[in-house]
Length: 517
Image (cartoon, helix red, strand yellow):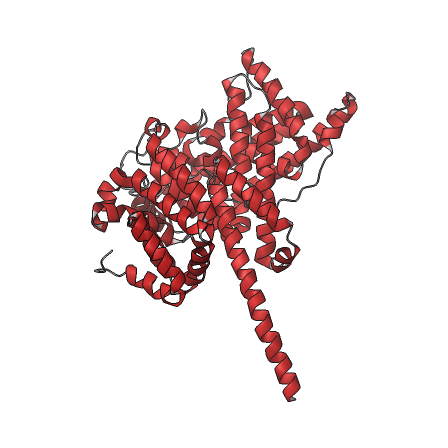
């Protein structure tokens, strides 16, 4: 090899490294932005900030080029999904409804749409539904309904099949081992709600209504699996019955009983929302006239405790759909609150968990949900402290601006705990007394993150520094920083700019026990 050739290879290597680093930085930034926005989707400021950021990304050809990696392409898909969900929900909100039953279905559909954000399997087809609905031609409307029925049923059967296969695999585990594991998991049900796997059996009637509340035995586990299989079979029979009905009736049944399948259909055919609105309004009239509604608000099989989480609509989707609706009482408070759009138990799990944004999303939404999951009753959940709500809203807004340095992973919880510990004077007090200073701590975190994000030089140094520290160290540093008086925090930010090379060591040092915080 000649000297010239060697120099060319070195040139290529050194030139490609910055490009790879730039691509990785972009992926990290948008992973966090998407996750943070998805977890705070009801906050208009966060949504608006994301729309501006992502639309700016789409207009930047150089950045789009950098994101032509497998993970980058998924992020572009998820960002597009997020924008689509926001647009669909805005249109859905304009669909006027009167009766609580119809409003509950609309609300469930909106929550099911939220769960589609991180689904990289969505492929918009476009039915040109808007154009068709402008025509009064009955044949066109019927044709469109037949097409919609076919697609939504296909989604529902696919979900069911995936979930049946999923639970067959789970059932292969040793029932005695599962009984021991579930007994342990049940003790932390209030603080760590099940979102996937065999843990979901804790929601079944078999386990919730067993006689011995102190321990779960093999017989209980086997009974729970039997309950799951029965409900899956019932759901299959129900879908087969719906298949034989006329298009308009079948669609209304599916809209009411399986909002997740309908949500996926709308993501792929956004023009069909007008048709869905018309179906909702027809259902609204039936409810107002006190006509017999199809299986009440939701099909009975989907409202049997946690078995709804085992049916075709998926684990987190089930909790998301029922959270805040008339059927939410069938779930524990924590499950309904913390799973605003959690993992998918069926075939969707492979799609979601293969992306970085999904894990970050779960962490971000759990951070916010944890503030409102301390009570054991539905009423306590719904009457969450207003100060906390406001504080978390401020954190949501500030967190988006500083998303690039938010320490996802264990560090996210550490960040909040460190902020609370600073005020309580001890980490040991956080578990029992943390709630006393939670609103204050979260609000200070929001203020601190805003100050950091407003100084691009500081933000850049911390972005680079986080590559050399772990998530917990970064979280602890940001938590302690938020408790400093503003003038002292300003001094720290100035030092960060002056001595960027020392920042990683300073972050690590601040997390050591015994160090003056």
